[in-house]
Amino acid sequence: MAIEVIKPGLATSVQDAGRPGYYRIGIPLSGALDQHALRAANWLVGNEEGAAVLEATLLGPELIFHAAAFVAVTGAEATPKVNGEARPRNESFTVRADDRLTFDYMKVGARVYIAVAGGIDVPPILGSRSTYALGALGGFAGRKLAAGDVLPVGQARPGARAGRVLAKGLVPTYPKSLELRVMAGLYFHRLTEESAKSFFEDTWTVAPEADRIGYRYRKGRPLSFRARKQPFGAGSDPSNIVDAGYPYGSIQVPGGLEPIILHRDAVSGGGYAMIGTVISADMDRIAQMQPNNLARFVQVDMDAALKARAEYESKIARMSSSLR
Amino acid sequence: MSAIRYSFGGDEHVFAEIDEEMSLEAFFKGMAICGELEKRRIAGVSEICPSNASYLVRFDPDVIPPDKMLRTLQQIEAQVGTADLELPTRIVEIPVLYNDPWTRETLMRFRERHQDPKSTDIEYATRINGYASVDEFIAAHSGAPWFVSMVGFVAGLPFLFQMVERAKQIEVPKYLRPRTDTPKLTVGHGGCFGCIYSVRGAGGYQLFGITPAPIYDPAQRLPYLRDFMAFFRPGDIVKWKPISREEYDRDVKAVEAGTFDLTIRPVIFSLKAFHADPGGYSRRLVEVLHGN
Image (cartoon, rainbow over the protein chains, first blue to last red):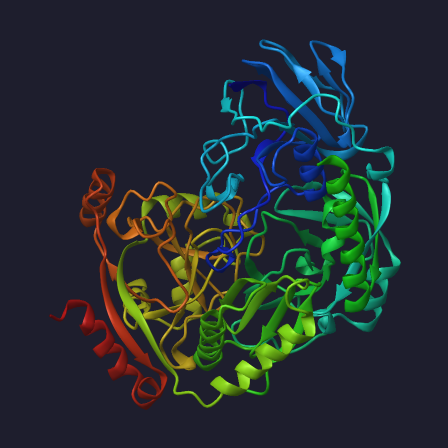
């Protein structure tokens, strides 16, 4: 069984639960930016939660199936169509041999996840099928999909069927304006008092430069760093530090101008002061932000971050027990 | 060096700043702590990343609570504080064609982003570091060996810190605005750090030359990449070897034929012995490369 790519969309790649363990040599986690949508899509078609799926950004692909399959589409609101006929989101459906799967434009949300029963069966590299495009690693030929690619699909599991539905109450919404919870820290103390406040007061707009590496935000007041004699080895700009490791979700502000939140294809380190980190429970929400969506950063402490994490996990658990 | 500054990076990371400024001592301490942490194989710890004068740990707070993670690191800090700073590692010779046509073509394309549009990067670095000629600069750059003090930014990219007294360290600013292109395997420099661009891409470091030796290859075609697709590890020691255009072309042919290899030797680095006689110790280290 295989799937042929007729049109790849804007940036569609093979992703799974990720590739931990190699960040120390600069190979990032990768994997679906929206892990909730990844699991939902996989469970709907009877796959393991971390099976490889297609992640499409802003514009869905056009695909032809070489054999019948069960498919589920989750994530951003974009109606899937089989031979031009609408199919439900968040519900598994059947495609037949030679059927063509297309998508309407994404009204809300930025990433659609397409799971096929059996999973996308590219060879695992370092324990994952995820694509890390900067390193030309994993996925299909180490890159985002192109027209003409033919993707192998694995063996569907016995439970796979059409008509499995994610209950309404379990479907997440993707507001165009939201709050992202941030633990201040790392080099937050390098900001002036005024900037330490304005960062959390202002409303920030997602810039067009928002991808799997990082999300850039603009239109808040510029941030200033405290003047100092720069330490040996740090660059000359006050926003520079001696190059250090960047946490996933960490926020850097090169030159004080535009905050960048690193996501799962993060550059693993560099010389820009990080002023805080988005909590783990909110990383999926970043993945579904379109350019021009709005965010406010809300400061939380570790206790609040752990509570949010527990809530996130209980939602996943509810979804798991309802779909499996 | 004062006590390590710890800060949580969200609910999944601890960031430990050993020192605000770069030094061999800070780098060594980070390596020692990361080495010990690795040895303990603590459940829930998924990434241990030493980097220059700091390190980063990623953990699962559902498996090891954040305060327990932090206490563990503080306890390791206390334990390695008195340890003898010795590092069993390897030294490798990396051939470099300085002033090569490819990085020259690239740096000329981005001249308007540079501090000194009228000279090349290596001429600029020569002048602001007080060397009389580019040849003298190359002799200093390729003289004393360098530590790989961090691997990252992108896959397999080594940051390098030269083993010389601070007064002798080469320092250059990064480009005023980053380039959108850098040839693969360019040897660059920014702040006090050298680097090799493991893949083609954006960058802000000054460009000095290019190596024929691939250092990252998911297909693992060369002998020294068979163990792992990225060659460099934090703690490796690098000695640059200036080569001619003929040697460069010969090496590139060997890379294409799959016969190219690097000279790599095991070595134990002692910080104490280095500080007692930096020049002499570095020379002895380099001799290991070509000794029997």
